[in-house]
Length: 228
Image 1 (cartoon, rainbow, N blue to C red):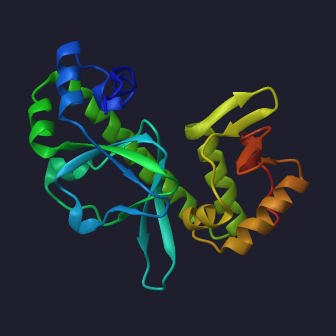
Image 2 (image 1 turned 120 degrees about the vertical axis):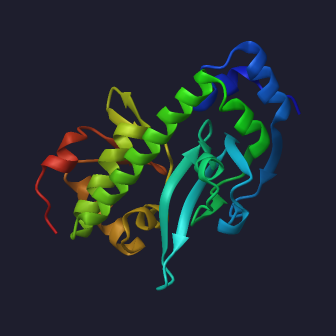
């Protein structure tokens, strides 16, 4: 199946490539589809490919000894992942799973190493890795809060900044998440997420639109009083 070159141009590490280089990447990519809940790779499988989400959505997660899943990142269409393992040869201590029916493009390590010799690709990749580090700090910020409500409010505020779209009614978080998925991101129970979201809705701090959330005034999520 042909890969849309304009789509590739929107993938962060490929933005600075010239037409010839972008065409070479398109020819080297391999496409594969995954059903909802299907594991794309585990820790042992990393280190050979860089991946691009062509359509759908994936989660990067770990399972704690207690049996609880912690979601470390969510990647929608246009995001890439797996590039860090190609740089240092280390495996990713996590599992990547399709959250919905998903199509993945993969680029083999040998082609990735060739691209590193191009300054535009290397610079764009550094920007991508910087964004990864900022995401990691955001996750740490969420988990440092002792109160469940503070964790959830911090997570929603961060999603407004990174995955939000401004509308006339506020910022709509464009990544649809279930209560269970939000619980896995914040390290609390699903029941707690449901309760806190209900309370935040009653206070007018957010409004649910199906599985998406609209936040009228995002700063109030982190500046307002925590009631728990």
